[in-house]
Image 1 (cartoon, rainbow, N blue to C red):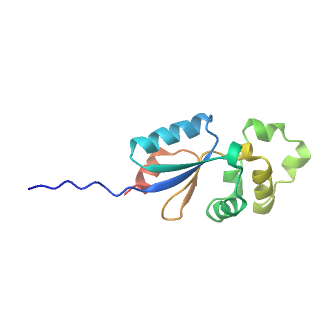
Image 2: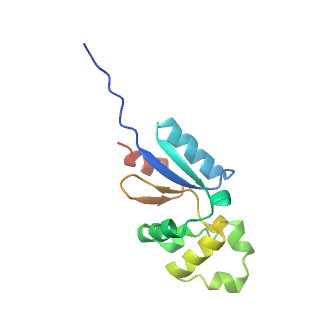
Image 3: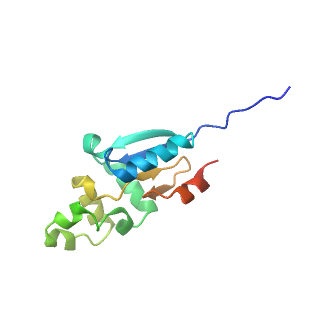
Length: 126
């Protein structure tokens, strides 16, 4: 008798904005891979300071902040110029969540990724 086993389910937390096209693609891709996704909506739930601090332990501040997006471009030049390190990036991310590059994903092993990269993500799955 052959017994089929279900692969272990892994859970990730996806942080972002639900109407963001990249976040939508990422969530669809993760769902297709059978990944259990916990979604954290920046618009409704805000950016959790403790988590954002941990993200900056794993990714560079200039990778977390989307300096090509509309939110960044609408910031006054002096506010843009004031973002020079992880502390100032954290302050901006918490007060202006739309400036964060999306999605931010925390993986079961503690890794943090920013943006959607199917090739990289496939390597993170069991």
